[in-house]
Image 1 (cartoon, helix red, strand yellow):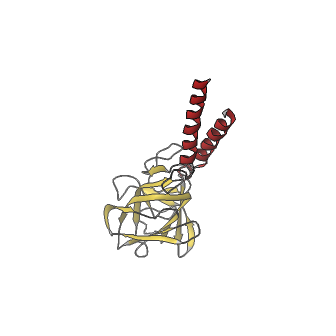
Image 2 (spheres, rainbow, N blue to C red):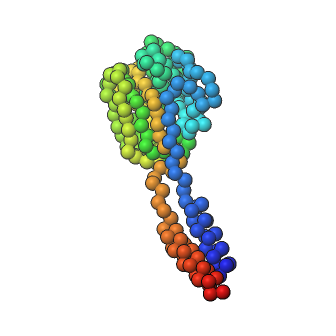
Image 3 (spheres, one colour):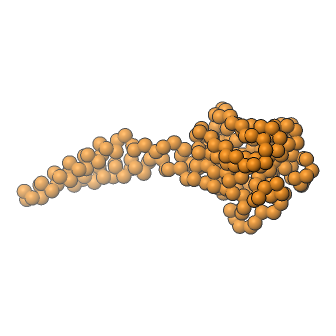
Length: 209
């Protein structure tokens, strides 16, 4: 009886330990770097936030042109712009596409967006490159919230509306790790019920003894 009780207890512990972990929320406001330090205008941003699970890269005409940049000339706080490295906000040297690559699948992806021009397009992809969801952001300098319902997002591509138009991203948030609700393991109730019955049987046998 004692050995059976121990075996069932060990089995129940294994079931719960094998269950996936809950998602961890991440928020990036671009006002500081994870390793310390304060951003300044036109500072390159590519792997500075890799420890939080995301990197950034710009593309022009389909080719990589390096990191994005932080700037606060057009905004009240630092935001991520599609500025090509080594240029300023007034140089009109702005990339076609800003790519965010996540270290693992994410969910609850949202951010603030401001655009100078027409609509900005956002495309979310999974790890296999399958398009999951497409959204658009209005033109205009006022920040608006963009939120994705898709989970399992591995990459986000942000497209400018017209050549050389600027856009900004701020307050980037996402859930890292497991992006789906974590269910109770199906076998857990069976193990729990067996443990309760064995416990009652042990108490009854002790009273008889």
